[in-house]
Length: 566
Image 1 (tube, helix red, strand yellow):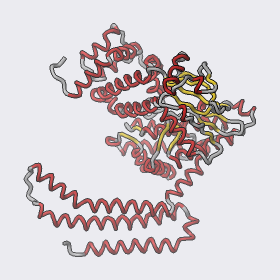
Image 2: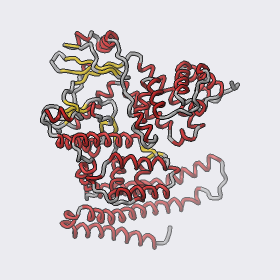
Image 3: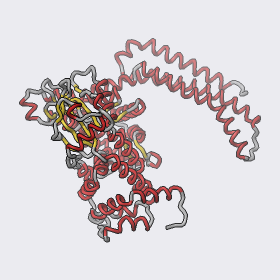
Image 4: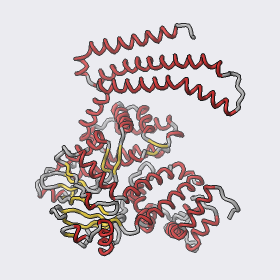
């Protein structure tokens, strides 16, 4: 080994030493399944690589036989953390080829059951009393056993049927060790393997680590469920189970039991007399509310997490994986919808770049050309013929070919939409999500270009420019301070820049006036174009006010431009 190490290399060596056995296990599994080449690409030095692969006895396929099935087998053998990583990657068709995505979707989050004695011990440690005293009834046989926790049926003393989820003993230590190893190897791989850097493997690993650590804490899942319950309190068609906080901790989650028919069990739904088309529409209502109104959505709505109650109400379960969309991100999604509506490859190009990471090196000319070809394929299809799944698959292929990645929130959103459309088609073969969502997107677009929204955006734009104009003098003074402290010799002294500072203030004022005038003209035009009936009623007052004010501001600009400079 080298005689001295910089801080990063020192940290890497400490991490290696503290997890050496796990590193060796990972190396052996990767080599055995044909992924030994990843070890060299990780950037570890020769001594460390030798330590990792010593006990494989040279049994590495050097990547020759590595493929999707081998990757799935390797992840399953490596345990819960890697299975969870594979499940995340199965949602990222913008990162992986379709064959890998399809194979990783087969990963099952199941595990050998934990002995019931260990489950009872955990409940007593967390809740301060044996399960038999906490609950009126506790079923020893598990309902399900997953990689993170195990679920048991129980009954509260007030008679409510509940599910008790108990975190697996030792899983936190195991997951944290694996996450530290993943993050370390991701950093090294990005430095020495261009593909890892291009795919932003460090960012993906960091996001995955944050998400999985949240999943380990059942308090987060409880709060997610409570937030959904608040959002859907006025929607009788959606049932969010109640959290029993008196018997919930970070390690134990007690939640109301949801019973009913799995939403994809068509035969049982028909036997129960459930209207499947109405059921699909109810699910779309919920999705639209989550995305367009709440900005908070269930990111894993597969059929096993959706049950239909006797009256047709949809009960949702499993709130460990959620996504959030803020107003800014929603505006970017609206921009993409508008661009698609206009069949404008240039605007779509701008919109998808704004929803992606890796924008710095994108070839926008090539991206626009690829999107033009993509649009030509779907140009003549009606909404009833347009299925989200194939469209999204081709769009993300365009992104992948242009070295763009969707933001994590958008990737989760895409996954949810594809799942919901698949569920809708199961319920109603004529179902298309794009057609079902049309009323909601039209409403959203109308709101975006309503007079209220135009005024709001106008105010925000004016405020931003005003702030910029106000900050310019201070920023110039700060620049002078930096120049003075760094000792650079300049020919302009501070007093010589004072006229420039004053000039900046004038420019700032003109910028504000110019932006407001332009925004008024465009706002009135957009409002007229998107809401014709309401526009006709307000045509003269709005035109008079908008154009009149724009004219006043334009006159101000001309007057200030002709004045003698200070």
